[in-house]
Image (cartoon, rainbow, N blue to C red):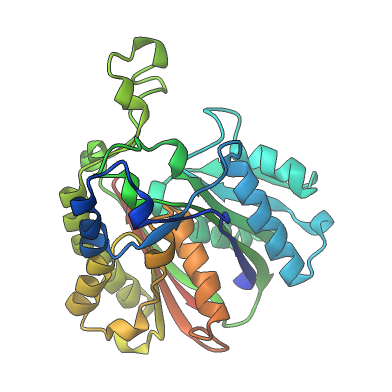
Amino acid sequence: MKNAIITATASYLPENVVRNEQLTQFPAGSIPRIAEKTGVLSRRIAPEEACTSDLAIEAGRACLVKANFPPGKVQGVLLSTSSPDCVQPATAARAQARLGVPQAFAFDMNSVCSGSTFGICMADCLIRSGRFENILFIAAEMYSKILNPNDFGTAPYFGDGAGAILFEASGSQKGVLHSCLGTDGHMSDELGVFGGGTLNPFHRLSNPNAIYLKMNGRAIKEFALRRGAEIVRRLCGEAGVGLGQIDCFICHQANVNILRELASVLEVPFEKFFVNLDRYGNTASASVVIALDEAIAAGMIGEGSLVATVAFGGGLSYGANLIRF
């Protein structure tokens, strides 16, 4: 049976950098709390005329170029996003057309901030099925369009960005070795955009703020710490790998304090955790893929490295993957 190896990674961040001190809609005295609470110092914001598929295309195209992989050979485009271009059709369809891969199937998946770990597992499963030789996985998010700019509980902490991974079939001992996924649907009301869709159609909305992201930060933090440690231990247990054998942890980039506490709970040196949220904020499902790409470029991940990707987010969902490079 063939599994999925990573041929190339890429990422794309909008050029516009917005630093904390530029968030002048909030009282000056509250600005230091952004870094204190999360470690976020700046974020990237896409142009007003841009949409999520624009970011996805940039990341996907860069990934194919880096791999020197002909677009005409791409068999599938899997796009993770919780900030789609529109309710329907799939954002992946627009990305597929503009990437110049008309022969590839394309579909969206939405597991919010855990979408990266779910997508890595899905790409691996599609390849392990024997039906596909390659999958282009893209995670793209544009939360600047779904945030209330005056909500201090959400607006300062998120940013826009996209990442991509080209997976190919291989019979080697490298690639995606194991994945673990989970969902706690009883907490689905703790994070989401609840206006629109069939639950609360736009024409019935009485609260104009229902079109923006709502988040219970305290509940999400507690969930992330509990489930994050749980899923990593489960991943290692099922794969027969010791925590000490993992060379690098690529976690969802939401809050540096969560990452420090997770490292402490797992009794793993924090130096093994790659962090870039100070520069980009929380880019939702794109965060793990962007961080993976940057960790490879920084030399933190190299030939033979054993890497754990870990994420948690809306749903509430959580997941982890074990990957050998």
